Amino acid sequence: MTSLDLPYVPHYVAAPPTEEPLEYAEIPTIDISRADTEEGRAALAVEVREALHNHGFFYVVNHGYSQAQTIRMFDIADVAFSAVSDSEKRLYLSRRQEEGSMPGYTLREYTDTYSKVREQLQQYALCESHETKRQHPEAVRPLLPEIKEFNKHNHFNVLYPILRLIARSIELPEDTLVNIHDFGGTNDSSVRFIKYFPRTEEEETKTSNVWLKGHTDFGGISILWSQPVSGLQIKTHEGEWRWVRHLENALVVNTGDALGFLTGGYYKATVHRVIQPPEDQRTCTRLGVFFFAMPDDDVKLMPMAESPVLQREGLHRSYDDVEASTMEQWRRARTKAYGHSELKNGKEKGVEEEVINGVVVKHYN
Image 1 (tube, rainbow, N blue to C red):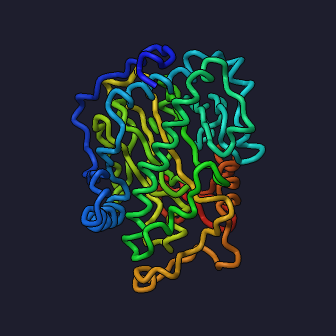
Image 2: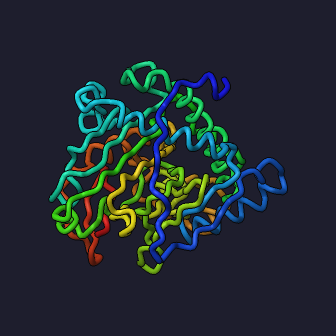
């Protein structure tokens, strides 16, 4: 399909990158196109291992999408919010609270994790494994073929190469993790469009300018398509918060709980948060395009003890293997708890905790 054949969508005009002198994290860059050769994969596996150990995040470049294709996807993402009325959105709400399932809309009705204000974000999630069971808003329907292709691109051309590099980095067969991340199978991997709206001064004061408290993602790998409105911060090993710099047409990748469980803590889920944008972007909306990858629902989240690296380094088990949650149990429990669980002060200063399926989950102020 040529660009002339594509359905018309209005162009979403994002804010220009900030010119504020922010303290940025030093995040490594992975050129995923080098994974096409054996020599490249061997080198990249080392780079990925070091990136995840030292930073928990890395950029991906040369991922196969042109700048024009990326711009088009952000235009499509905005349609889900600007071209769909609130009343129509309510016809396609997610079942996150009832079923622990993300597909559909999450509106600005959830209380933030401070329980002081309503979140100023909307989300629309599309999951390949749910597509035969869900309908979509009228404005989104003509765009579904493109979204499906985008989903496939994330899954096969970005996620799978990363999973092969991670498996290789712990001396397992390259397809070990690929084999438990089936496309359109029994998992909740999803494309998500998220739009943050500016808060009032009163809301910012009540939440200390934090839009999304420090947390870990509950899946395996999270992929953020870089966008110019600053807000994302990562927590360094030294306990400091550092901004994530926008790189044009790059991806920002981090690990979640599931990979932490599967690697026995060798690769820890990385802590990050979203805060109020800097002064020169303060009145702007912040549109995000994401791909959240999860292992198949029936995968037991216990260490891959057959890994020679994990055997040498030692395994950290969050629970006995017999009691380990499946991916489905973990994602449903964490999804249901979001915005509704009662957090208690932890042992660390500025950290609140909740217990989910016998595992302590931390939230960082």
